[in-house]
Length: 209
Ligand code: HEC
Ligand code: HEC
Image 1 (cartoon, rainbow, N blue to C red):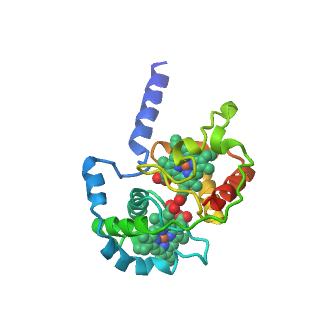
Image 2: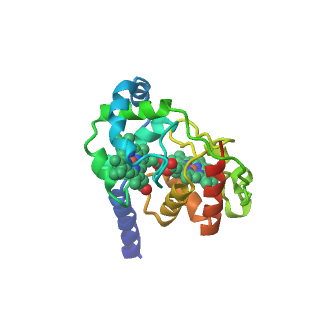
Image 3: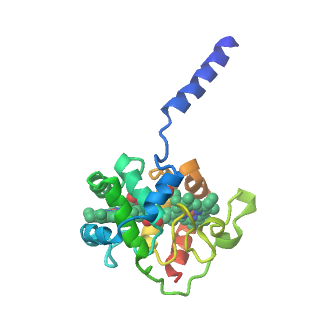
């Protein structure tokens, strides 16, 4: 009995020690103040490197009008390896950026007008505004906002984002390939969605303007 108990304590302890944190970003007043003072002009210069990959002609996520705090967190997570880009492009690139660079480029993108969806989206899952009590699934709008505009500090804008990217990243949360969400919030939510619902939700948000 004692042995079993010891083994259990040992396992718990091991898990606590071994588990990788999902992110090293902490929203301290200091970090938030620094982000408010990002130099968008310097960020504009840096964005020249990003434009080839982040534009309307490919499947990579759009950054225009995204919350600067969210962009900054993702860049830090890529740099630290907490978020792994399957193509590794972002991990390589982020490792060349200083903390000031990440602050400034986030400020620049945050000031751009968001790309608008084409409209006509319907929530065919019923989850966007109501969630699903049977699965203990919260509504998406309770965090991402009524219009998918995102919320402070690190809940991203989804409205107008590319459908292929939204689907890909929701599937990545579901499988655990993407695990940089603090408290596993998105991993838990995505794990309860079918692949078909993920497709429908991606379609819905991509059409919002
Ligand atoms: C070689 C192509 C490439 C370049 C250059 C590039 N990116 Fe990316 N970026 C990607 C890909 C691919 C993804 C999606 C990766 C994934 O699924 O995690 C991505 C994802 C991101 C994300 C996450 C977006 C989200 O909605 O979660 C941010 C933020 C980002 N890039 C910022 C930048 C910035 C800033 C630059 C320039 C300093 C840049 N990227 C340059 C390819 C690129
Ligand atoms: C409890 C709050 C919460 C709820 C509810 C929620 N989200 Fe999220 N979501 C977040 C946060 C926080 C992030 C950013 C996590 C990170 O840093 O990776 C996020 C990230 C995302 C992303 C990644 C966007 C990008 O640009 O990479 C998608 C897509 C997404 N959520 C879709 C949804 C959908 C669809 C629902 C409803 C089924 C939903 N979320 C419900 C908090 C929430």
